[in-house]
Length: 150
Image (cartoon, rainbow, N blue to C red; front, side, top):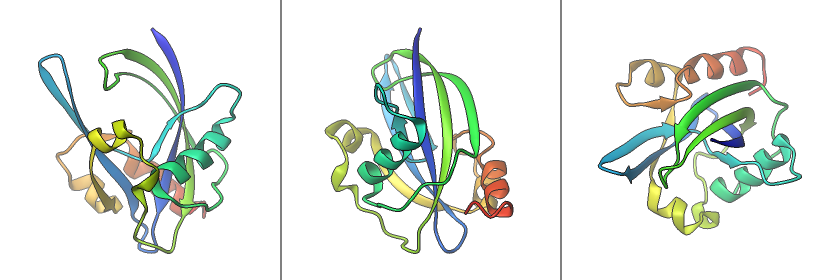
């Protein structure tokens, strides 16, 4: 199984809500659908924090500084092409004053599989029946807000 280091970003607005993207893609005979933070794979020779900064620009158009690492998640999951990977995901925080983002940097693949965006507060995360990754995102967001990382 391929190892996939990745940087994920909690982009937090003035109302303490995190930006999530809804991903939807078919794998074999089923559709995978879930919400997740902006972010993606770490390129060869790139640090997790540098990847977070790059992914932030590519997926949101924002050029704000990212925090130090606030969370790590190890997970096994299926990618859009059906490949199963072992991911080492590191989470970072960015505080933005804007509720808008710019998807102009999205790749063709991202345009196909990132089908919706939404700002989520802790209460929204706790109340949803939708699949959200990481599963404990409400706790991570609360911890970041309490620690002043956001």
